[in-house]
Length: 66
Image (cartoon, rainbow, N blue to C red; front, top):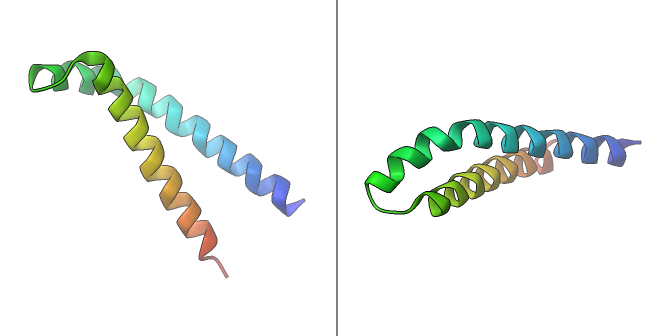
């Protein structure tokens, strides 16, 4: 039961990360190309960075629990 709950929580967190990244990406992606890179790369960088940062933090916090 505990393992299934942990996997469900990680799945829900991943879904939330993806949803928030999708909503935030157009704003940032429209700003970044004016500086350096094209829009497709900007979307990929935003989604990848958000997913990596949040999932790494969540797993690290979960691993340190008592």
